[in-house]
Image (cartoon, rainbow, N blue to C red; front, side):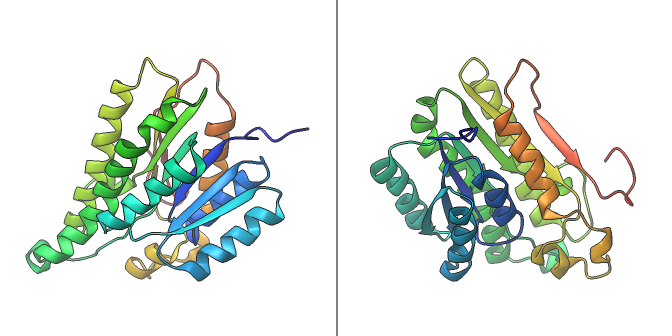
Length: 242
């Protein structure tokens, strides 16, 4: 039986590790061509091996999400070399734990550039290709911090609220097209990024990246009349209904 994503092309940013790698693993069995974008080539190569071992094609594009020139090279590669994009997963992100008075302009700008501007640019510059797909998806990785406010998270929270707001507007723009826009808002997940800012939380209490990936797999392989705009995913030990 052919994979559910056979002949489709997927872009996963932050595809070298963590949630991005698990998304690639989850989609690899569906026979898609998977483009992996991140800064570290060695990590991308490891993910590519997982993808290809599962029977899908992997493309590596080393990309600095904070650099507009690097983003342009990524979009050019997809437009010119592949000529197709069905699923865009804006997963790459950085965090920052800092009091607002200790957060200088450069710190703030880096977080905003990677978490908010890069997804905006990729949505804008790849939308033409996604429109050509008979079944297009844009999935933007926000956060619980994009829904609630947390101390020491003013810059990070700003970026994730911005990404979520952009996604809501984009969904409205595309509501009568063949493209679905989804937002994922995870709580604490067992990644290096979360561990760096919340070393107080036991890994056993954190969401496994594979759990996030399984939900994304469901979204892009089941398309009926029911529509999921946003998924709020919390740790089972955290308070309900964030």
